[in-house]
Each structure stands twice: as C-alpha cells, then as structure tokens.
Amino acid sequence: MKRILLTTTALTMTAGIAAAEVSITGDFRLGFNDTDSNTAMAGTAAVPGVQVPGSGYVTGTAASAGYTAATTHDNKLGMYNDAGIAIAMSSTLDNGMAAGITVDLDGNDFGSQAQDKYTFSLSNDSTNVSFGTTEYSAITNWTSGGDMATDTWANQNADNKNVLRAETTVGGLKVSVSQSVAAGTATASTDPISITLGGSLGGASYVIANEGSKMGIAATTAVGGATVTTAYSTAPSIVTATSAAHASDMDTSTGVKIAYPMGAITATASYVMESHGTCGAGVLACTQAGDAWNIAAVWTSGATTVTFKTDENSNNSVEGSTTLGAATVSAGLSDYLEDMYLSVSNPLGGGASIMASYAIDGNDGVAGGSSDALDEVGGPDLQEGLTIELKFAF
Image 1 (cartoon, rainbow, N blue to C red):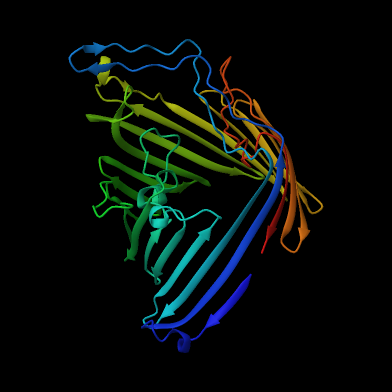
Image 2: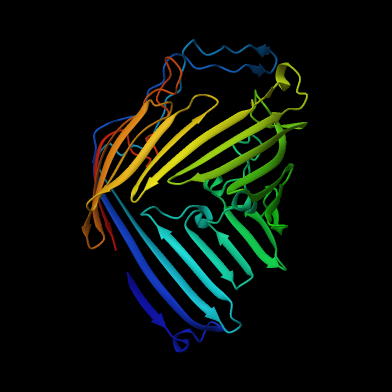
C-alpha cells in the first residue's frame, strides 16, 4: 500500500478541508481452470403469439418437452487473469465532518455514470451521506425472520445503479432514506424511495421499512440466552405469466427466527408463514410461495468450523473449513448434497497466496435437473472443475 499525505498547503483550492490522505491498493490474479460449464440450448424455445395488422392474431407455440435455455456462466476457462486497483481518498473538514471517496478499477472502462465504480461519503458521529456503490436503506437495515417471500427489497448489487443514501441518529432513533439515481438521463429516477426507522425499546431492537408498495416491521430481543427475531412484511403479489407486480393483490410473510448457542454449537431455526391475495386464474394468476422453515447448526473449535443446513425442500448442505499449518482447507457438500468441492489456500508471504480447488456442480435436487450453481459452487463460490490460482495483493 502506498500512502501520500497532502497538507492544507496543497489543498488551498478546496475550502474547509484540513488534510487529505490518499491510499492506493491493488491485486492481480493469474489462474487456470479446466472446465467449460456453459451449456447449449436443449430442445425448442417457445414462440410467443403476435398480432399481425390486417391478418389477425397468430397463435404462438409452446416450448418443447425438456427445453432448457443456453447458459453462459462466469467461467474463466483455460488460462485467465484479473487485475484491480482501489483508490481511497479521505479528509477531515474544519467543521469535523469526514469526507471520503473510494474508486475501484478493474481494467474495464467506466459505464454510464460509472456504476459500481466509486463511493463518496460525508459523515460525522451521528450522520452519514453516501453516494455511488452503496446499498438501499431497506436491504441495509432490515432484519429478516427467516426465508420470507415478501421482503424483496431493492438490491444495488443486482440493479447496478448509483444510490444516494442518507442516515442520521437522533435520540436513539436511526432514520435512513435512499433512492437510486437515473443513469445517462436528465429525468428523475422512477424507483421508489427506500426508508427505514430503527432503534431500541424495552431491551429489544426494531426496524420499520418501507419501499414503495412494500412494507416490513421486525424486532429482535434476547430470551433466556437465545436471540429471537420476529418479522412481518408485505409486498404486491407477482403475476406468474409476466413476473410483474399485481396492481392490487398483496402477499404477506410472518416469520420467527431463533438462534441459540450451546457451547461450541450455535443452532438457528426459523419458520415463515405466507399469506396470499385473491389472484384469479388465467392471465392474472399469481405465484404463491408456501410456508418455509430452515434449520442450521454451526460447530466451532479453534480455527475449525462445520456448518449444517436444511430446509422444507430438503436442500441439505454440510460445509467446513480448518487450518493445517499456514494453509486453509475448505470442503463441502451443498445444493441438496449434489454440489461438492475441496479447496486449499496457502499464503506465500508479501501479500501473495496460491489456491487450488476442485468443484462439481451437480443437479438442482430434481431427477433429471441441470447444474445451477453458475460457477459459484459452495460457500467459497468456486469455479466448476479444477482451478489453480495465484493472487498478489499490494
């Protein structure tokens, strides 16, 4: 890491800034992977019906039995490399506010408004304003009560938009407001504003979230050594045919999650009850999620951890890691115990390390199913097949 200290003499053009610090870090990866996990289309895709002017409506055709679309995974087949540079700048204003900006460069040109490339922040002890690669208020502050179908808050990692978020704490009440910024256009964003209120009351912490037509309230408290979270959320029903929100029907989720430590083992269990609107049959039929439960147990002993998970669909997984000398060894069975992996990572000193892994992306838990991990097998998100990778951090 290189650090350069710039005094006020060098920053006389920036009013109010007392001092600034700039740090530059980088990393480089060089690796090899032997498996092409991309898949070709199988069968014949559906053809939608069309309205032909003057000729009436032409009926479409359904997809053939067993049809699956072609997939392109994030697989670095053969020799591959990746480089990145992160630049962080920070300063303290005369009024005590801290200003900072981080920029991530990965060798690709900036996209429109450089989404996912930078984050600017301005903060003091009680208030923070951030812009760029920062998450929305609801998904940041929400506490889920399990695998809830309706707490589908906007996700900056998924929509790749710059986000403006402001948070402040007044008398123990934390208020957070955020919205995305429309890229490449002079018009305002049409996305809903994301708002949360949170704090503590009677020994319990709570959060209230709202995002357009979505709403949620959750509370967490300690009961006899256990941590109990109860949550309620509601969101528009999803029309199956279009995957769009229904104009009036609403779904609700009510969940309870309990985490209880027992010596070296921490057990977590949750149960979510789903309630649905009155979506009718035909084109307005809605997707209706069923009740869900999850059980997990984590055993820890020194540098060794083993995690077991299961749910109402018998999606079982067993994953663990340990250290052997300086090396870290990870292994597991995930995705209905059909994905398997083994990886070993060893530091070489000076910020360098070497990693070797082998991963198998099995079916999706259904007879005749196809691989679905998209080159992100297990907890470590490993590539399918044999991978050997050198990493250098500077």
